[in-house]
Image (cartoon, rainbow, N blue to C red; front, top):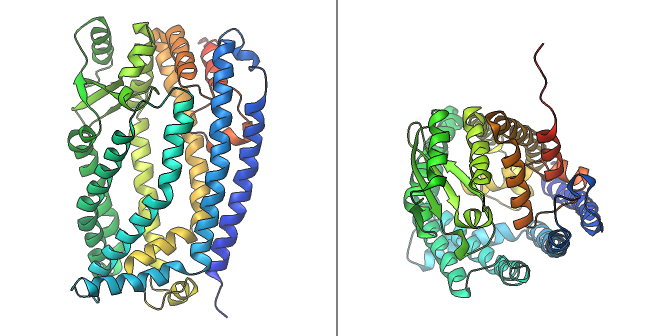
Length: 424
């Protein structure tokens, strides 16, 4: 008797949903707490706390509905074998278009096109509600309905342009890869990731946001001085117009080797009236670079990608696996989709482990900025970001341990305030 792969996958998906819902309920209860954590008393104003609490509760309620509908649809699609039905209908569409339905590339592109349309339709109500109700209610949404749909159309166009050659290459590699399939797939994805990391900030990101050089002035001088002191190869310093879409704020850096760039959200500059707070946030980001966190993360992703492809090569010819999901053929893209479903348990364990590492990196980057003398400014900057983004002030320890890639503010402030150990 064949192993019931489909039933096992659906069973785990539902079990995971109940587990994560339990964590969500714990976090929802934390949002309801009427008082600030003792560490934040006198640091966060009561007005900001009340606004943060209301925002967190609104997002939490929306999350419950979204997750319930998602698990309902995903389970139904698998249980009623919608995917194999749609795969066959995709072949009919290819034939109707006058193309060869036996060609797996054409067949796959038609299938993925339909999946993309379905995803856009089912996700659109949630995206609209999240943006124009939840975010707008709390003063974050700044985009118009026209800008929302314009971004969506641009995203679809990019998918239509970039998707087919990538999918076609993957299919050919799997068909021709032989014993070295995992290596070929990993090598292709490695090169693709490098190309996308190079092209995205130059060609793709400017399609959605405007990037302008940070004007000459004291802030620019301080950031350039800090970068120079750390031998960070800063080539360009940008401000991005994040305020056209949201009042949330952030800063990040990107680039390879000697071509590094730093990007500040205009909202960050507006919210942090003190330049030292912004510089302290940049010092934290440069700490990630100096301590090789970005490199370690990239290597970890490459190792996990290779292991995933290695696992895929072991099961891709399992006819019983395909049959369990309702397929009487073994298309490449379907094999990848099924494989991703079967390793959901492993993915969540890995995700949890990566979150642990990420939180450790955040503490280390904070300590790096502190060592540079930005302790007070970093503390003030983190508090300001927490206040302006209305981030959750009270967090459940189980929820944060499972979901958070960054430590809660309470823990970060405690680490910054902790006296450094003196050398003997």
